[in-house]
Amino acid sequence: MPVNISIKTLRPRHERAWVHVLLSGLFLFLLSLFTLRLTGNPNLFPTVVMLGDFLIPVTYVTFFYERRHLSSLTLTSLVLGFVYGGVLGVSAAALLEPLFVQHLVPSTAFIVGFIEEFAKMIGVWVIGRHIREKSEVNGLILGAAAGMGFAALESSGYAFTAFLASRGSLNAVVNIMLLRGILSPLGHGTWTAILAGVLFRESRNGRFRITFKVLKAYFVVVILHGLWDATPSFLSMLPVTGLDFFLGEAFVGALGLYILWRRWREARRRQET
Image 1 (cartoon, rainbow, N blue to C red):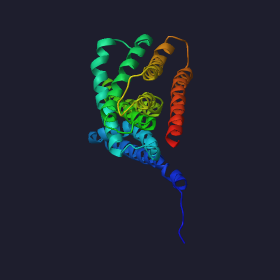
Image 2: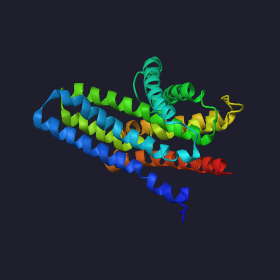
Image 3: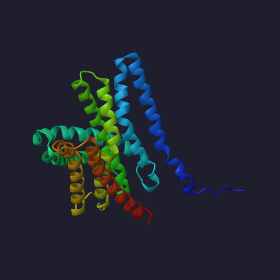
């Protein structure tokens, strides 16, 4: 007697793969960190940094990729989006930011947001223009991959800078990796996903269009990015506690996630109708 198993029955099991990626990656990170501390072998240092900086971004992208039943994106496109978004984004930001930003203060934080949100979209455009179905879901997932590629490589840069500034302190490197890793889902991946989703949605006949709604989404993510970067500088001028700083960043991050959730809900509704 044949047994009918619906896709909806199987889906929840498959959509927990991101948990396995997170737990497996965390185990490997802790193992490599313990081994490095135990042996003092500097050859393990790049492994620790790579695992620490890429763990959360890869988990975040895996979470979205598991929703591929709503998307036509291939794994190749997703990986290329991660790589291109990271490499092209970091390179473009490194070239442009010194021209416009000398010191990071609350006012220049928004300039950084303007530049980096543009830089990350270079990778989205390079990969996205070859994608035939430019649905909002595809844009959201590709944007999340590009943004997290940027976040992972940027975190690697911060980890290396911390290593040099602390004269080789492993604790300083681990602290910066943990901080940026925990906060990464609230930042780059979310912002780029929002903008890329709108860009794909506004496409016509397989071509990207810069419409008013795209520009509006761009300025929204720039403001979120600027607020995120400006919060530490702004709060440093006030008699606040560490809890106030955390709550400030959490509020900006939660706002970005809420907007992303709204965009994802709309994209699913469009895809399923």
